[in-house]
Picture (cartoon, rainbow, N blue to C red):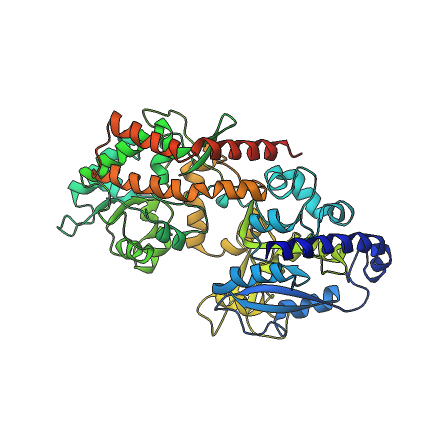
Length: 546
């Protein structure tokens, strides 16, 4: 199989040399500026992961019709059910049965494996020539360029840009402000004060039902439960509040003073374990912390039983749905601790793979045109088209967003979605949705400002002070196949660290100097030094990209 794939890749690279020579002639089919992008209608094939809310055929979708009219591009979608996406995508690459372009579902491993091999087009020269919006965004957000450009200057994929202020922190946090006031406890600023709040919740019956059923602190520890709550690696968990207070902004991989750190063996991680064990022993941590699902945790919030947590649950929304005042909750400030006196939280990078990633394959006859299309996707007009859907009354169907203005002059969109349970559900019938766009504060204001609840979620973020305490965790770095193979060792190491974390927190294994040293030495014997060296080298390459 590997021999066949190698021969195939060699043939592809040889053909690409001839394609470069022919590109000048092919350029005659597209306009370098203005619209339409193609001079005459061209069909472009797209392999795409279909979600259950999507229609089974995209050909009559509003978004597809606009693309035909505005760009002279007939996007022909090859739909793959999302649950089988990875298998079908990998088979397409292995057999070279590829579409012209992907809009979504391209991972960093795909870039690393198929970009340099010639299966994906290097978009960098086309971006430099035809994409001023992309160039501008890359100059503003160098973390995106460092992540999606290779050290040799090539670029095989670009994501959704995300610069919306309220999204610039990985972990949103919530604390019951009404309970603080009722119990006479100050809003905590460090782990000692947070502990005092949790004790007061446990002993004070703040929900007023005469039962000791309050859960002071909750979260999701299991990998499965975290995956339900977030597309991230695991930073969006309740425990991250405590880790950040200890000076660690990711559960596994961090960068401190330019050096890669494997978090589960850092000395401050031991302090985190001791603190969590204290919460467990004193019944301040949810007894279901290691086993509960997202739905079970949401139910506890609906019953008004939880005092504080991370961002697994959109707490104000759950409170509103339960008929309670969502203003009872607000964001937890960045906490400090005995081992860290600097407020710090995990900063979100200025991209989001989960919302759209565009990559052009070597099958595409005119990659320049697709780069021009991508450049349009990042404009305000293109972003609204991709993510918000049609304007109410401005198309041949029902529903859509209506432009409105608040008393202070701030614009926002009023959604119309009769016949659908939500505007999101409506949009999924009229747009692929998961197509790269620019999620900036302007677009967020359009979609949020008309919704008091959503506006309050933003307020919680701004008033928490978390935006001012951001620092980046370890980034998504480009890796060679050899490096990827070496880093598979993290699967066993992370699994062991997770198991021991649970044992230390619950007291199944007593945490003392001997058990801690045994635990650290076990991880070192599993090869953490070699893995850390690979991560450091990849990080150094990442920082070198200009």
